[in-house]
Length: 135
Image (cartoon, rainbow, N blue to C red; front, side, top):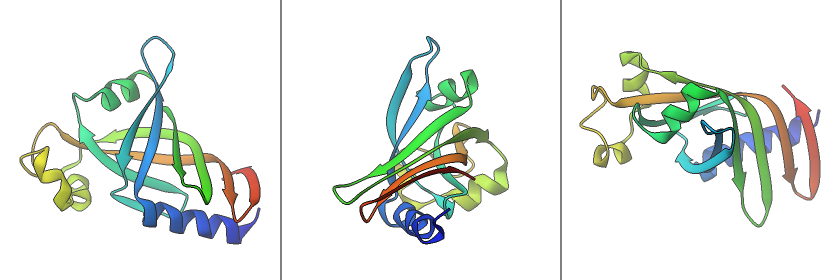
């Protein structure tokens, strides 16, 4: 495992923040959408926010396997793993950020929830170096 490449991937997550999330829909097809990182622990896990009635929540309830991808002309960072929906009030408060105000009444909004993605496998292409592995 190239720890320098893993470190750089963690920096990309915090720098770019927007990523493509791919989940499996009810018919078994992959379905992608864009999300924004609320918080991350390097490449180990990341959180983002959405609504309990959203397509993301419905697909997560159907199948908790997911893929997240951060990409630019300079790199491609992709992780496969498991995703869970968190409704704990303390976690919702901790993950709240200003950009959510246009979508929810506040961190106590009953529709607002946090998604936690935990990485199991990674595929990195950074600085013209490619690496795949498991955490």
